[in-house]
Length: 206
Length: 99
Image 1 (tube, rainbow over the protein chains, first blue to last red):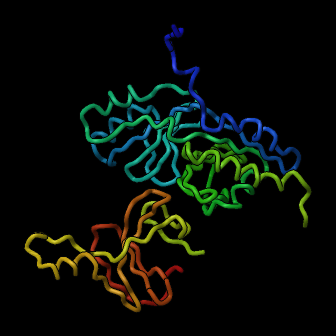
Image 2 (cartoon, one colour):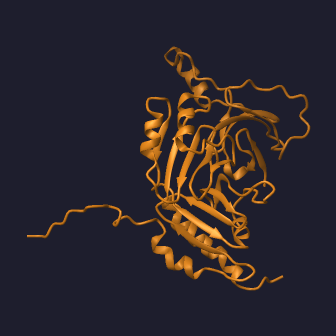
Image 3 (cartoon, rainbow over the protein chains, first blue to last red):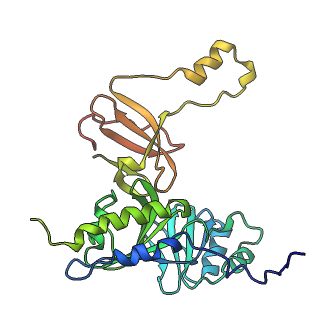
């Protein structure tokens, strides 16, 4: 007879999209004047909200998040350290919580029967953190968005592309970025970033 | 490299956008009343002007919303951008625009 065991919790079984790339990312770290480092922030909570501005559902969700909902492109309601809401479209938002708190029950209860949508998409995207003096230079190798502080301030976020795949890009500090690629694109994005970071380990040619 | 002015997101790189064909092609009120020829006209026949063309575009890698644009097919310049559902704007002049 085979021995059977009951799985008490799936938390120990789950695996983040870039878990197997941990050592690769650590080895790619560059120090010095052109420092840049990459790591994964695993299992953050990400909840997708759909609600048309001005509707009852929008008002209910804005109250329930505790930080409101962002009004236009680039805006982030709240801070990266707690709960933050990113603007994805006029009627689409992403609630982010790095600590992994389960936010959907509260949000679902708040939306109740109003028109709108609350979907836990924590497994849809992972979060990669790119930090260091050269972080913006690494991103500028492929990202078509204007990353200059003049148009992309700290605690702003946009949807754009990196390495030809869609990502959510969030400037968390002056030299720190959160990159959120889809789970299935994570391996590609990590390999692309590690390759892009490589040149900053040596002296500039000119 | 061309910037397209998304009504929701502002100027973004053209690589984030997808072209959606001719704008203002209304779905027939009663498709069953159409002859095969008229149905084919609706499905497949589109204008191919040299000059200003009203087109649908989608910000596929951004806010994922559709909008309409008046584009000069000769110079590729975007002369006007307007939201889906709005009337085609009258152009005062065909000079300038973003390219």
